[in-house]
Structure formats: structure tokens, C-alpha cells
Image 1 (cartoon, chains in turn brown, cyan):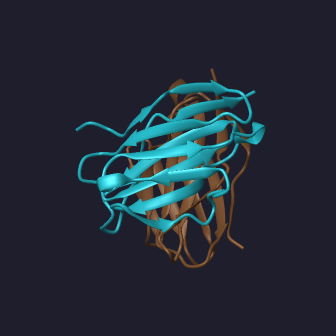
Image 2 (tube, rainbow over the protein chains, first blue to last red):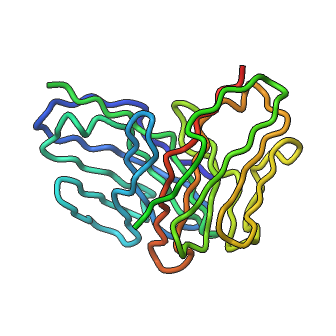
Length: 109
Length: 115
């Protein structure tokens, strides 16, 4: 079966750095997405990786290793507004998005 | 550019009643998705349309759920009759339908509570 694993919840301090891991087992691979979802709101796109390596976009970076079925989202200089759920999703061989359950990130002052 | 529109934003019904949700995707987006998101879980794809044709409805409970996308633009999702376990947020998303990224853009969702 297809599976996406990510931690249920993480806590970090304002101004610090946090890394959210995602491992996947899917039938084929056509890219990995990270979405941010604030409570009661719709997911919004953060990043997309299809090749191995690091993609940097401001305070957020996303890393992919296809051979290990592994990705992480790195958030730097954490702000209170970064408190949200972070969803990892993989596009399989049928170009369907397989979603993880999300990691709830709690930022403390 | 206008985003994905959904209505209503909230709906409370009793079990065995019927309910319908409406979605208007981003103009020009060929692909439209309906997801169900239960609290604390990731979105679960119910149905995917490419223009007005169904691409994937393998996870749609067809005995009670139906969806259509007439003219390849707006879409409606219906539940008839509703069950308690249908309480969830129903998200509509759209994407251009081509290109490497094919990012999905989500609407604000409809929060359904079945009593």
C-alpha cells in the first residue's frame, strides 16, 4: 500500500529552527509537496521537490532524497504565525496526491 | 486572480438528511478535486475531474455521495443521506492540469457537521 509518515506534533521556540520529517512509500514518484494549513483554513502550497537536494525559499527549505523515500521541511527564524499543520504529499505514478496526516507545529514564545 | 470559491462555509444537518456543496475553480483550471478532511487527518481524495470527465472516483462512497462538473467549470458534491461519520471539512481544489508542478489551489472548505 501507499504510505506517508510524519510526526503528529512538534513544539519549537520562537526564533529557533525546526525540521519536520516525512517518509514515504508510494507506487511511483512524480514529486513531493509541502503544504501549510492553519487551523480552520485550507492548505496553502509551500514547496515542491522532484529532484534530490535542497530547495530554499526564504525562511523555508525543503529537502528530498528519492533513494531513501525521505523529505524534510526546514523552518528558520520561527515566528508565532508559523504555528500550523504541515502536510507532506507525494504525487504517485498516476499523478494522484497521496497525503500524510500532517504535523501540528506549536511555537512557544 | 480570484481563488477557488466554495459555498456554503458551514453546514449543520441531521443524519439521513441531504446536503450539497458548490465549488467554482480558478478560471482556466482544467482539473478539479473534491477532498474530505477529517479533523487531525490529511485530505482524502473523493473525486477528481479533468474538464467535465471523471479521472478518479475510487474513494467516493457512491451509495451516498455524488458529484458532477457540468460544462467543465463549476462542480457540486452531494451527500444523500448523510451519516454521522460524514462530519468533516470538504475541500475543493483546482490545478492547471498540465506542467511539471501542477500545484493544487484550495478553496476555504465547507465544514459539515452531521448530528
